[in-house]
Image 1 (cartoon, rainbow, N blue to C red):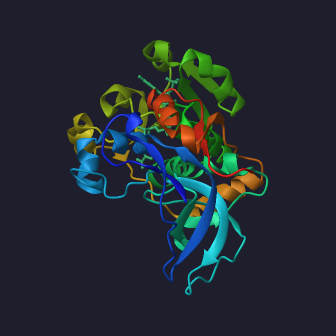
Image 2 (image 1 turned 90 degrees about the vertical axis):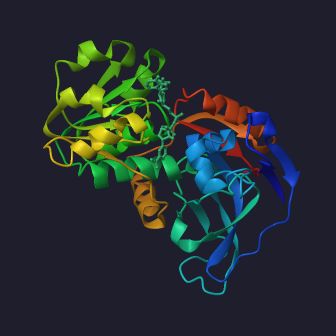
Length: 316
Ligand SMILES: NC(=O)c1ccc[n+]([C@@H]2O[C@H](COP(=O)([O-])OP(=O)(O)OC[C@H]3O[C@@H](n4cnc5c(N)ncnc54)[C@H](OP(=O)(O)O)[C@@H]3O)[C@@H](O)[C@H]2O)c1
């Protein structure tokens, strides 16, 4: 099969599309023919060899040479213990690496049925960004109707899902983004959109029940004055500078939390249902062919994607 291989940590040019052996599913896995994948920041952070990630993914060299978490595709082989899915089922899924390739072996617990109303390209943008938004707002924020929610980084992969999910739950969503993304964030259903170049001035008038830093560029220190007395700050990306403040909120009324998204098929199925019902859609920033994966990384790494950067792997 064709796959984007990362032999060693470094710049995007280290990625090479090569022919490698197609994997074989174990009894509790299925083999998925991948139609499309997407880029998440963790892909280029691993590729760059960020210190903390080396502790998990291999210190000197990446243990798994194929990056990529998100995929959409079709099941073409079943392990002997598979009970839920069958051959030719169209699925979406997220797993730790291996999705920037033509085929992947994956446990069925990581899969959900692909929303029928979406293309493979659109659905490949859902898994990690959608799960992060869902689990942040539902599990960390205990989101409910009529709450005031601020989404910082509302135009990125995670942010675009967070705005739509928050809207679905009946909250009043305020999105923060850069000037060019204001129309997009409005179109996703944010009640108010704030230009982040003018943040402090505009936020000073309001207080929020939940502030979700979906961009990974905020901090509890910056945002805590804008929380209601029982408000919750959720960081999508933990920073060392936040460690002590996060710890101290254990005793205070205002809370600061962080999360590591669970790659869970049941949660993916919840998002898939919301997509089928028309509440949530994928915003596609750009589409690259697998052969151009280095360019896809370079683009995503700028950190200003409007929605998801998709990698097309098979012809639809
Ligand atoms: N905890 C987890 O399990 C988990 C899972 C997924 C993602 N994440 C993390 O969540 C973060 C966002 O992921 P993503 O997929 O949404 O990334 P993305 O698609 O690249 O979006 C990044 C967002 O950050 C905004 N941004 C860029 N520079 C900024 C700045 N200086 N100040 C404020 N906002 C800025 C961008 O908006 P503008 O273009 O408007 O600047 C964009 O909305 C990443 O750090 C990622 O690693 C964590």
